[in-house]
Image (cartoon, rainbow, N blue to C red; front, side):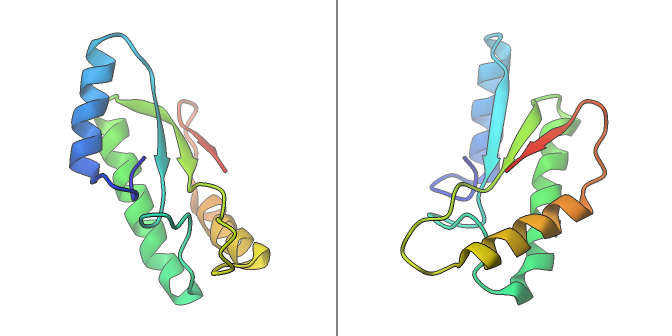
Length: 105
């Protein structure tokens, strides 16, 4: 999980270790710690660029082909269902999916 308590570099290192032991990696990319997507729509574009930069790092090394876009929203009331959906749609409308990369919300 990237965006929770770990950085992309930490997650890359752990993913290399898993791959080297014959495991497949499924990478969940959260916006920030305990935050699935940005709360503010003005942050969506920067989040999308950050998301795809991270995906690029993992795919370039052959570490993952399955990515989960954020976790389910928490119930603290900081993001509505409509806001969560808008953020997720931005990612999906920005994706150029290759035959080997799968994205899931």
